[in-house]
Every structure is written in structure tokens, then in C-alpha cells.
Length: 323
Image (cartoon, rainbow, N blue to C red; front, top):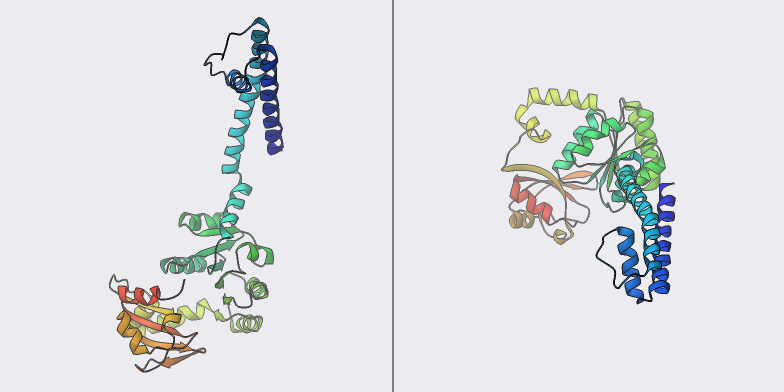
């Protein structure tokens, strides 16, 4: 409604400028440029002075133009200010601006559900400099994510349209950690339907739900309760190794990361990768199975390597990966 009023008002002002220009041309005989200048000056009440002497008819015409024009100009400015403020604060407008930004994302990760698990997932992905889009139907849960600079989308992640708006068709991966097995199952089905190549990791509360999600197309299914138990046991049996593999060891000099083998290194050996970057190749992951990282092992397309070493060395391996 405001846009229609704004368009109508702009049309009225342009009509008034045209009317004033023709009026001065007829009454005073000035050039067209002088007539436009006088009309705009009168409507805006700037008061630079007329291009020439005003006759009685011209003065009466200017008075009427000012009386009509100043009201229209003030109303236009008020409506403009109202439209701008509403556009900045209206939730629907804010949401539309957010979704316009999502259109340009490629190769990002969609995280469905922003509870405690979802927040931890997002923090780890952001630390790895990955673009993340979070979907949750509770706006209040997304406030913290927005404060961290994470893209957010309010909606039901089980809805295909919501996943499409989050860019699931262009994403590299999707994580569904909603606190509901049926919801996570629906997300897996919908996401794989939109993008069969999408890597999907889902949360499940028990093995029965996990089997259903795998059949639905989930690449990995995680039971957070089982993971917590395994983690506690590992910290008792091998505390230093458990801390290292879980990422709890915070160091400015040491890092362990999994990196996809860049095309520039396909056909080269593990020894070449170590020599060119300085990183230690711990293992090669090929076809869903780990391969011992022998120095003469030739890297293939689709391989991933688990590398360890100084942060700069590991970063050098990541830098060689295609964007």
C-alpha cells in the first residue's frame, strides 16, 4: 500500500513540475530550462531568485504553486522516511533481505536445528572458515547465530521449500540435528530429493532411527549419547589422544585436519605432498576406507588426506584445494 501511495505521489509531483514549467513558459516567456528551474525552486522553497522579473500573473501563479507544492513535498518526505524505517525494521522485509544474500552462496553447509548440538556444529564449521546457513523455526534461537555472523533462515527444515531457500540444491553438505528423529528423517528425504549429491549427516537417538535415516540416504548418522559415552571412555583410556582427536587441544602451532586432495596433486605421491607443504600425512581416505599413507602411495581423484603439523603447513594443504 505504501509503495502505491509513494508512486502516486511521485507522479503528482512530476505532474506539478510539468504544470509549473508550462505555466511559467506561458506567463513569463522564459526558456524551458529557466521555467523548470523556477518551478523546482518554488516547490522546494530554496529561494535563489527568479531567472527574470516576475509579472503580476507570475507572482499569483508562484503563490499558488508554493501553497500546493510545499504540502506535497512535506508529505513525500514523511512517506519516504516511514517507508525506509519500516523496511529496516519490518520482520518480513528483514527476512527477504537475508534470503537475497543466500542466493549467491555455493558449496556451503546447511544446519537444520539450532539447539546445543547445532550451535556446537556451527562453531566448529565457522572455525574452519566454512559458510553456514542455519534453519530453525524459533526466531529467538537464531538471535545468537546472527550475532556470530551466521546466515539464518526462520522456517521448518522438513519443508522442501525452506531447504530450497537455504540453498540446499547448491550446498556441499547438510547437517540435521533437530531434537526429533521423525523430523531429521524428513529432512534427509527432502534434502536428498533436492540434491542427490549432497552430503547429509543426521542425528538419531537410537539405532532403529539411524537405520531408517541411512536407508533414506543419510551419508552418516550420529547418536550424540553414544558419542558422549565413547568420548568419556576414550578420555579415561587415552586422554591425550582423545583430546587431540576431539580438537580440545588449542595451539597456535599444531593442527590436525581432513582435506580433500586438490586436482593439482592428483597423480603425485604422499611424499610429494609432505615435501611441498611440510605437513605430515597420517592417512589417505579412499572409497570410504582408510589407506596407509606410505610415501609412495599415489593420490587419486576423490581422495581425502588426514594431515597434521604446524598450522601454516596444514593451511598450505588447504590452500592448494580448489575453491
